Length: 182
Image (tube, rainbow, N blue to C red; front, side):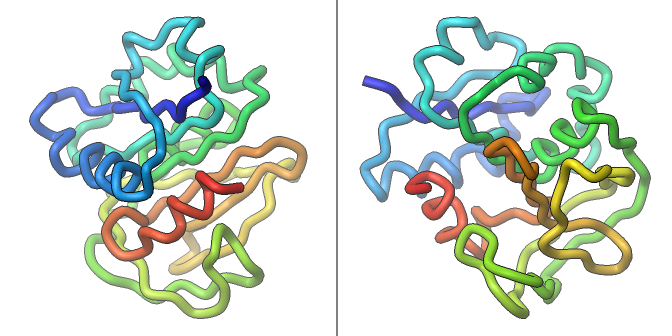
């Protein structure tokens, strides 16, 4: 049986309590089969065994994944749905040619979703916790929400790759469930 793979990018195991566990709590509550791997321990069998992947966020000062971006090269050829949350969105951006810029935002913000995106449409309150974002998404990506000149939600035009800079596990839990059911 195929399961959803939840990817931790946290350098410190303790940070998974804040960035991975809330995602897995949502999945458990919906009786979704999943397994968790740190990105540095993902094997080819994990990618084959999974039917979808969620790449979770991490703490503000933890940018270790950027120094190890080659570990995510598999995303280029991966053919199954992926949702990147915050750091996960930054990873998608870097792998597909974007660049990381610095700008911190912490707190609740209203974002305007131009059209439906994983159950979000119109003006919605979301939780931001980041000090970096991706610029230069390119034509292969459709932008669904952008606030303060920062892209907040994207989807690849040809692949099932989704990215959100905000944290749906805090305020928009149904977004994760929409991704899982898609």
